[in-house]
Image 1 (spheres, rainbow, N blue to C red):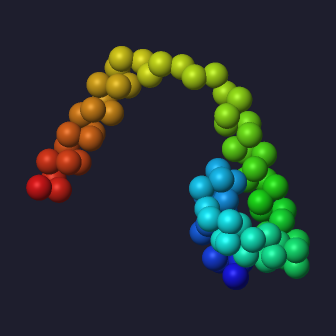
Image 2 (cartoon, rainbow, N blue to C red; image 1 turned 45 degrees about the vertical axis):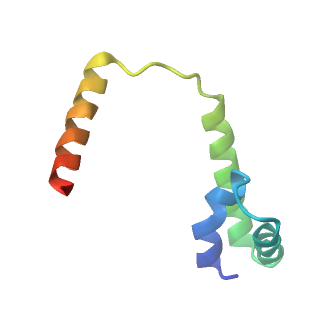
Amino acid sequence: MTCRDLFERLSEYVDGELSQEICEEIQRHMEGCEPCVAFAKTLKKTAELCRRLPSRPIPPEVAADLRGVLVTHLSKRK
C-alpha cells in the first residue's frame, strides 16, 4: 500500500467501513510511515470532534435554498 492508497481509504478506515484485510494493509503501511500515522491521528481526532457536535435543524430558508440548488442541478442532468 502506498501513501496515496492510504490517503484514499483512510476515511473509510476511521469509520470502520473496510474489510479486515484492507485494515491490516493500512496498519502495516503505518508501521513504517510516520507522515501517514500523523495524518491518520489528525483525521481520527477530527472525526471524533465532529461526532460530538450537537445536531441542529437546518433553518427553513437554508433548506429552501438547498432544495432549489438540487432541483436545478438535477434538471440539468436529464
